[in-house]
Image (cartoon, rainbow, N blue to C red):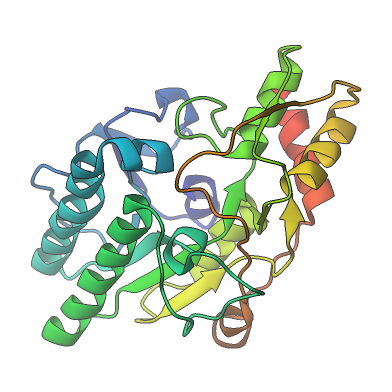
Length: 280
């Protein structure tokens, strides 16, 4: 997002508590302030706020739901209040799979929301707060329900997505671990495509899915990761984890119709770009 904003000539301020982010990931030309979103915020002069800050680890949410809610619900209220004082528009990074729960095919934005984890509940609460502020104050904040986002610079530790975990392990010569039988599916969408959708959504005042509409099992993903890395390492199987979905895939046709957005980077190409970034 920062790269995309700088590329079009915007002035960019990054707010991050660095609990998982790294200073070196902030591109030259952007300014960094170390801030926790649970504290009062100041958006003076900002036209748009891309609210990407979150407690994003499903395992942590299950173990510490109070902490998850403090960051994802109360933190989002802090962001909304800061934006209200300055007239700043918010684009909120929500989640598809964790909000919809189990899917029987690509789900649209109007599908029933049945989160299985406290993380999904806290993200859905954030969306509802944005919608309430839109009704109350006439704002046009927007929520984006991302699929499983992956790409260069994703940390293979902590709250990391499975792509970063697999490629990170292969880069270190370790054996990646697959939880469950590996048949569970996700909708993997490249970070650069997500950034384009996020920029296109400014001020739309709605909810949009951001995914590819393509299901890929964890076993299929691992084979593609192994191909990108040129590895013959077999994965290790481990018991399934509480709160994990079996199937998740998004219908993003609304984003195509209203934002003019479609994913451009296929999974195989995106994995190759991600692997190449690890080798640098």
